[in-house]
Image (cartoon, rainbow, N blue to C red; front, side, top):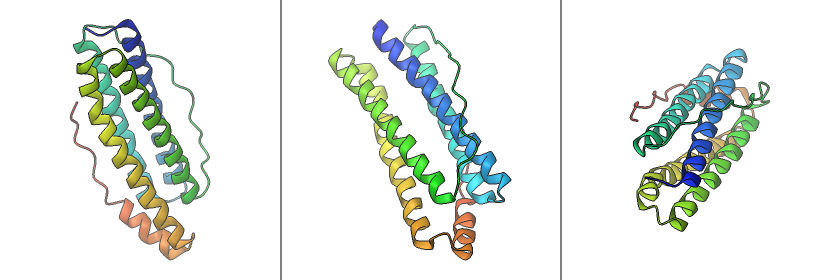
Length: 168
């Protein structure tokens, strides 16, 4: 069993993961509207991944015999600018997720909650991957400097991203 403070913190993170999913779905819609179907595909797959993350928290909370508390998500933006600006926004958001995960790990360590600490290690590793992937895309966007051919090629590359396996 986990503490009330840990339950509250995990519920907050679960709801933040749902919010993250909404941000990525909004980015996907924006890219589709702008004719960037490959970028839209990448963001849609990211939306699906964030939903998986939220559900991992959902199931973990229930597995600990604690109540899941769904909350209203803030409305995401719907105008994101250039592809570079989109991914800079994405990086900032992922860095916020990383800070939140690290705070949860700190709480688990403070409470000597080894089960939750073990559960959270998957997210620690995931965040390293998330930030590295987004940084790589930002580097490519800077290389092409907004040129049509470069954006077209990167759009095709991002369109190859496959849907995440639904492992919850």
